[in-house]
Image 1 (cartoon, rainbow, N blue to C red):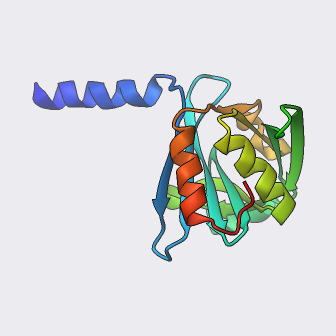
Image 2 (cartoon, rainbow, N blue to C red):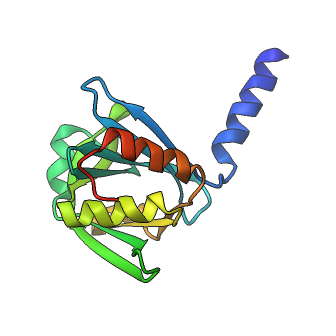
Amino acid sequence: MMKVTLSAAILAAVTTPASADWFARTDSGGELVMTGLAVNPDATNTAVYLTCKGNLLNFEVLTVNSAKADDLPDYSGTKIVLGYKTREGDQRKLGLDGKPIVSAGNALSIEANLSAEQSAAIATSVARGNRLDVEVVHPELSADKGVKKVFSGAFTTALRAMFDGCPGLKL
């Protein structure tokens, strides 16, 4: 009975839409990694990651697809579109060239390196409690159509983590 109850609780947590939060940790190399819980258009959840390296951010989004290293060329040319707000409150979109990678469990992720200006814009938007919209664009990723939304829960945690863990980032 305990196994059934525990399994049901885990399943409910996985399939229930969340009001997505940001979580901070350091990786094995001591770099700050911000994990954002994103809500897909079909109300399932996925994750996005912002990794800080000096004054630059690396962005990674987990897709619903699985892949092996041999499959990665099929996903070349993938674009990531980030919707964010400026300091003045204007809504903006940022298009990035994505690179397909294989994540844990053979999950397909798309990553992109942001410039210093792009890093500051995204970090400032997240740190001010604004929602981050993420769209992955590629014909082979039809199951991943639509905008993933990373809401602003725990943005004060994100702000403090970025302030401490990314001293070169202009917030």
